[in-house]
Length: 327
Figure 1: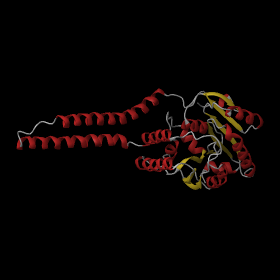
Figure 2: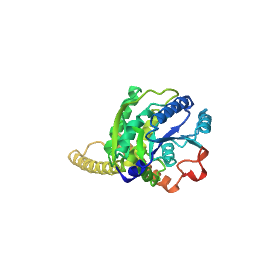
Figure 3: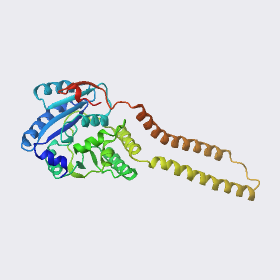
Figure 4: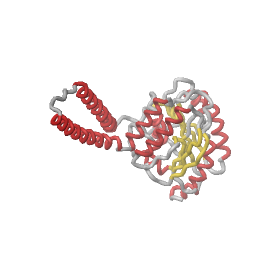
């Protein structure tokens, strides 16, 4: 075990359960009941705190969290001034936890919080990151296929291995949280960020449950957008691809020019092709636009980093002191 876990063994460790929420009023009650039962079951091994980040819900989510915080000091929460996105919500949550380790779960109960017992045991054995590997998940075949292809592509093009079929359901050691706090990404992809940090990481297979209430916030477009974030944040392959494609087009153009000169020399009366020229011009314009778009994605991330926007803006808090706020 590392030194931090040895130090924690002298007392009962604190485990933070980080929960980002957005319009999850239908799930808060069931989630809290299961968290309380889990805390009672693990009372001989650790203490728990429940840290919520509300991405400016428009339903009764914040009111329900307020009621829970009034009766249970373990419930701590932040409400953002607007929706800053799911990944930023997770990152803000990590930065405001106090635990020796942090368990990230969704409020829809698709990832069973009871798996903390298994994660906790592996963490005590020395693992810095324990993540859930989804064996199966209740969703449509199209979304499932897009996810599988996306995970494969992200893993292949990334500069470091990123586990496949793995979401944000994980237990993370405090040492990893401190490392995350040093990375100021305005558009984070935490799965890739944590995977690229190293440390001892282990996966636990599980079957994902169906959502208990409400609707999923991840449709196909948001999933594709998250996939693009993963690629551009953790891979230089698109930039290098732009260079290789440009070089390949240049070589093809030289061969084409040589072939054209040869044909003109052997057949002087060959009519000039207007359509072929127009097609080549349109192809060149489209290719340039595509390559500039790739370069623009990287420039946009540099611009946002230099602009140094906050991860999120906190509007209200529950059971938190002003000196605890780190955004």
